[in-house]
Every structure is written in structure tokens, then in C-alpha cells.
Image 1 (cartoon, rainbow, N blue to C red):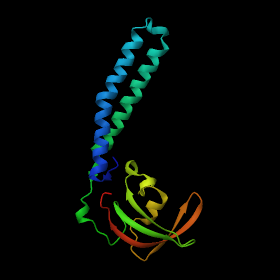
Image 2: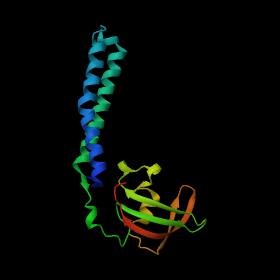
Image 3: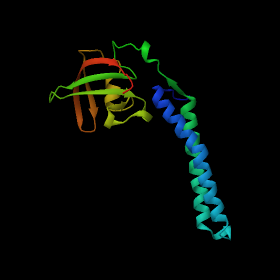
Length: 161
């Protein structure tokens, strides 16, 4: 059973562009490297040729994986999102109960996660621990540093920043 992933329109376009780039420029570059290595003579002892063929195999595996992700990708209709509880593409403001620090995260698919921009994966410990929670609820989440307790302060729709 394939895993369905949910994306923003922007995130899905980024994946689509990456796949297109790999299929066009990426394949062309690898074909050029193979041809260059082939021109250097005997293929049975040509490490450059073997390396180029290995790179081609890896490149094709990446393309196949991206195609699989794309075939199971769904764009979330942000206008119909329920903000009464945390879900994919929720922008959630939480408070660390231990130190009082407040932080805002947007829950996104693993491929779109980027901590620098405040986007965390729904598959991460914090993402999993927040899913389904409502404003005012607290949750204990096991993270690599130990147990943390968070209170959900606010839930809003992701606006594509």
C-alpha cells in the first residue's frame, strides 16, 4: 500500500520541477559522462565508465522514487481546513511547559520539512505528538533529549509564507 503524502501547492511544484530537472538535465549530464568514459578505451578496465554507469543507476533510482512520491501526492485545499485541531498544514503555536518558550510550527510532509522556516514533518516526534490536539490541550512528547510537555496555544491555517 502506497503512502499518501499531503503537500502545499508550492511544495508539489517544487517536487515536480526537481523531477523534471532530473529527467532532462540530469540524464543528459550522465549520458555525457558515460560517452566521455567510453571514448577512453577498453571498458573492461575503465573505472571511470563503471563509476558513470553506477551514477546512472543511482540517478534512475532517485527518479523512480520521486515519481512514486508524486503519484501518491495530494494537494491540501487550505480553504476547507478545520482549525479546531492540529492536522497537516496547520500552523500551530505551542508553549514549552518547562521553560515557557513559545514557538510556532507548520506541520508539513517529510519532503517539505525545513526547521529554518518553521516547517516540521508530521512524521517527526513533535509533529506526531501534536496531531489531533486542540487549543488548550497539553501533550507529552518523547524527543531525543527526553520527555517534553507542550501546550497548544493557537491553531491557524498555513498561509503559504
